[in-house]
Length: 273
Image 1 (cartoon, rainbow, N blue to C red):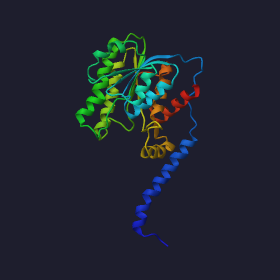
Image 2: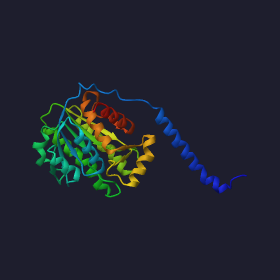
Image 3: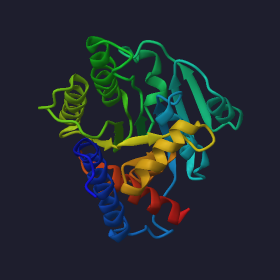
Image 4: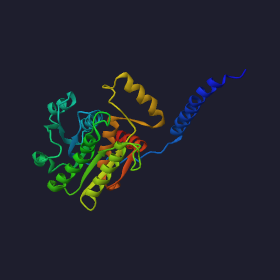
């Protein structure tokens, strides 16, 4: 018995989607590429880092990873507001929290920035919540101004800036936010060119909150995208940033890490812990 034409038209896209999804799952299962773990003797301590955006979903996971890392001595958290995790870090004496409001002026942070080894930047806002001009200020002007100031005052011989960007971005995109993310990357890379600074961009797909903070909808989204390597936990981004910091000589200014690479470096980080 033939299916009615309308039902066939409605079912065809669903069947194709399921087939492509299953193909993606199979490709993921068959992909056994790994990052060669570092020997336990090689990594040194990460004495001072700074985290921007720790009150957000991604930044909270980055901070969680840094707090759990025994080789990290001091974490400077620059934030507009405190969170339970930030406060717990302050109580442990591992976090130095600075409330900061003007992200176009970092003069008040100069003393803190001088000896910071790496900066993990997760400051941002959804394009759904702000207009285009504000989005550009937050995602381009804020980090660009910071890097200019940091380069001016840093006393370290080598420093790294880890910029949380996004997947599916291009200069030709029809979406304003996607074009601005690319512009931010390019301006940051250009600022670092020929200096002691390396800028690394991270381009994850869906970012799932830490497991203890995720609500049901977020967990469902994470577990839908994870089998096809289109999702990472926020903590995994932090683990990857820590691993990339330790492996500094393996990376160069302008490198970009997609979701699959983030997962591999996170796994390498966990292997040596």
